[in-house]
Length: 250
Length: 250
Image 1: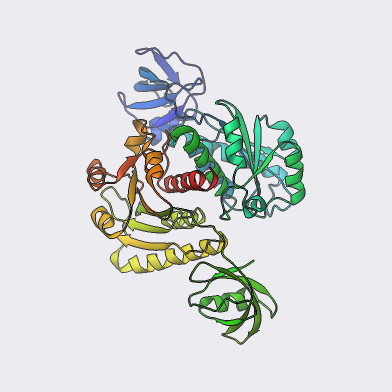
Image 2: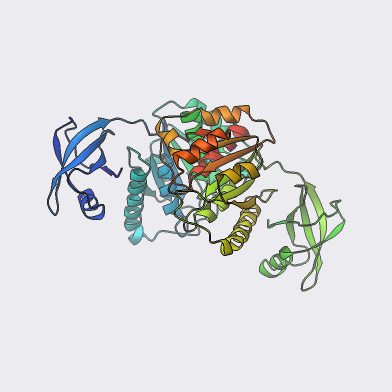
């Protein structure tokens, strides 16, 4: 069933009606060609999922009758914020799309010393708006109840200062090469449901030893993610999958 | 350091020389413009990694002096074969590229009932050759010591019969929806190092209930991969990451 995120509080008692607003109206009526009686899922601001039936519509408005309400548990127990160095091509899009499917709470892209790509300041807002749209689409498709946030930080110091977190890890190739294999497990074991993990990944070129050392001094732990070298856009997927496995399946 | 897979047995005693053959010669000499004294890594047929120095070359041959030999442990403890329904666009390429980075032992693509894409029989060999090349490139980049195999099966019955495995799981959306969360863990707990897991994933359209039921009857267990809906090319990445985490980090 098609899923939309509501942008305003609505009454969710079965049988009541609410007016759908925003871009969802256009998508449901024009793209999906919804007819009266057709159903869709609407995610409320407090993560409930309303199954709603189209009652009536005009060219720009849709009245929805509440059929049923559920509160599914589909979000990762930990809030994982994926912070990545700005990368070339469509890699940032891929990170946001796949990371959303895999349960990330948010994404932050940052400039770093070895980065081969930079976002021009005048294009940054457009990039972030586009990535936020990708996050929303992926959240709808993967049946999430939260749309991940997408932000930018000019460097690793502001990242650490500005992004609230209860624990932090940085995936560093050198840790993996040295066979480091327990820091991620130890960090996860110390964390409790609802806490926030900031997971930092370099751009294609990696992070410098100084950048990693500064992160370590700020309490962020260097963690190996297995013995194989992963590309910049694959490592965040590994981390999110590992967290889901250890917290949702084990 | 650039890495090449050798296609013939070579002597690996430090100081001895071997002749490099195959496409690696062209890549090392022409693309990488190797000069005498330059080093590269060469993976032997028995998964040793030789650091070799270019001794001399002609237009089409390269003599390599063995500098050092190591036997790194970079392969997943389980041999995981990823079997996916044939998908549209570049999804098969993505599955092979990322799955190789994440440690898959092999890939099998199969035709299935809901598949929206089919490989025309006359193009199949070309597709497989291209995917095998992608696997080799990704194996070199991720510093694997094994190049994953890439195969095709016309349907799920031949897949089960032809692909040797000690255990099998099928990722089925309906299992995830029903909150199934323990079968993957139970399957992994029963397996021993060196055993072969066949992990089956539907195409974009998913598998039919009959296909899944036939797999179950053949001993393949339906397993949920967490509460979020993942696209066809994301689910295999989740599985491989989860296996690496549970077997290489925990």
